[in-house]
Amino acid sequence: MLADSRAEAYAARCMVEETARRRDAGRNVTIEASCCKMFASEMVGRVADRAVQIHGGAGYMAEYGVERFYRDVRLFRIYEGTTQIQQLVIARNMLKEIAQE
Image (cartoon, rainbow, N blue to C red; front, side):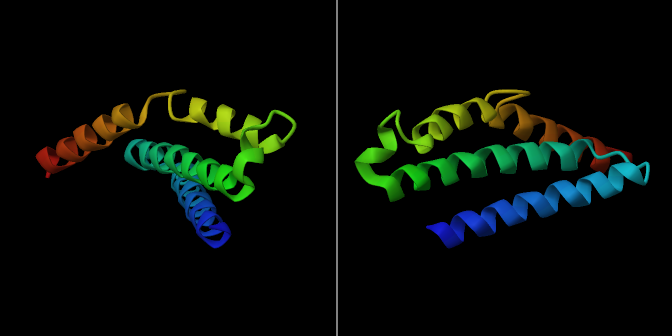
């Protein structure tokens, strides 16, 4: 579970860094930014779920930081557009790109 969480965090970081490089180069990154938001917010939810599972019952107790982390990451799936909104942004922009070709 730790290895899976580390690999997913690394993938999200690489996505964000590549998107930032493209933006710095002056490119439109609407699709890439939505992909980053969607992937990273879902990823952090999976990581939080694993962290609670690793800690067992103690993962739900307020004395442990895992409980707060688990509660807080739920906001990432909602803030700045839900996963479903990000999927719509990605799909619509993909269709626009195809139509322009």
